[in-house]
Image (cartoon, rainbow, N blue to C red; front, side, top):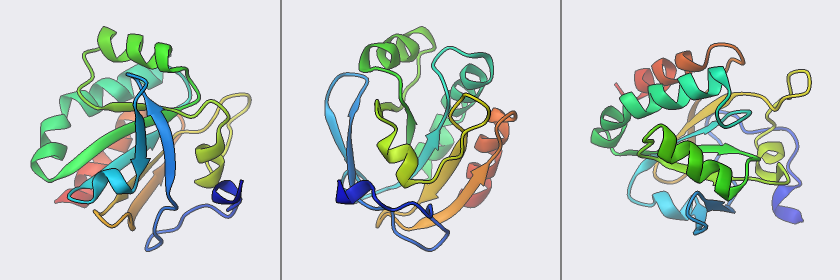
Length: 154
């Protein structure tokens, strides 16, 4: 598919290519169309319910109001199923959208690097036009992603 052929990854200042994934409720979400009035924090993480991923998701949950007040939506993305995302969202009372990328197409489009056998962990902050304002990669420090994203909003 042409949409997913971009392999060099996204750099600060570039606009994210359009993509569409299902959320935890099975509804299709189109980005950047969905964020026309807001910005977005799009974070890629390896696995629902794993240790670092759960801490990261809960840190995004605990800071959700700060993102929302600044006019930014939060989207978590990995290859987990819609059902897995729904359970993860309910279990940890996550107030943001989780997107299912079952074939890792969007992950590849954003050039998220694998670490051993797991998909990588990277966060992108984009404005309401979909332009990348900041990106951050750290596999082991999930909570640092929230600090980095919040710093961009200030």
